[in-house]
Length: 143
Image (cartoon, rainbow, N blue to C red; front, side, top):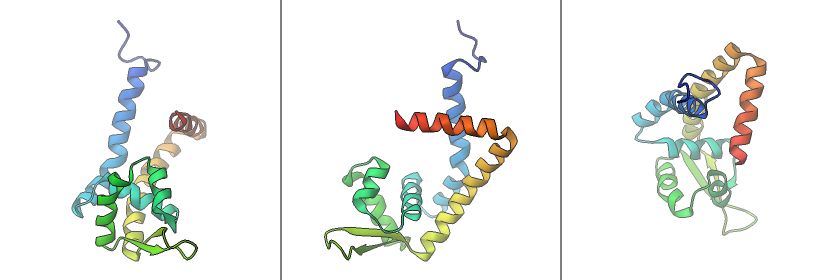
């Protein structure tokens, strides 16, 4: 039977990944919950904030969801004036998304919680560990 404390055991990595993700999302989840929002709303705010003017289609591609799955949470963010949608000047069929001032403030709060957590972990673990973490995350994302 494998040693459950062996760091080379992939199950140990799964456990660490799970607990790290739980810690990574906890602070943002509390802030979102107070507004009646969830992680899907956070992902939308994050990607629209990083890519102002992105189309709904580009957001669907970035999130890897269907148009149907995106519809309700995006509508809620639009209705709550956290995101704005404008018709593209180049193609009237395309809606371009951007954060409202309130959406920018919320996204900044959420991102600050998570960047602070990552920044402290990277500082504690050093540059070699940080580089390794980025390499692992890139590899996982490419799978």
